[in-house]
Image (cartoon, rainbow, N blue to C red):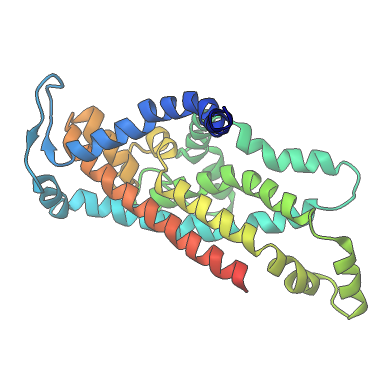
Length: 293
């Protein structure tokens, strides 16, 4: 009887977890395994056909696909252009709004508002702003600057989409930093002021070292989000012009739902999974080193 009670006590938590695990298995793990299997098969056009094993043929095609390499380059440029800004600028915003001022709640809400706006609405609004006769070019015209083709020129399109991603993410990461700032004891700043560390220097001496775990967290979250960017590209540029703003996720969508090359899309998705896995492992390594300092 005692053994049965002990067994039931150990089994109870798993019974509570079972519904969530079943849903995850059916909606996440099983489709992921199917995608991995299909990346080694030929499965195109007719979705009722039986997959045909082709081994590494899809990977050989991928290695010779210039569009894939361009989308990989665009995705890496997205990482380099977006992640440093989203890791640093929100910390500055969090420091600004972490004060006891009148209407500070309204300031925080104003910075956070872009986060709660639907990406569809934001993308359409920014597409109007970026138009040839849009508001941005109207501001530039009195300065003698010719209208800039923000979304219609290969040199500008990707950077313009990046700006929307940054604008949309600043408030979200600001809140993460704000939570970390409010956990720092005020006595540390008072002690630093006695030692002559004041103004910006006190943030360099106290805030940045204590916020290092949050910096790594924001860096990895923003990096993973940058590799998975889709809505901005789909709404604003459709990957153009000349594939200059096409990212890996958009290329997966294009191959799967426009060209109906399901197996090839799964192969590209597997590469994306490996990239995200690598970023996550780097974050775990850096986080463990930070905790050991």
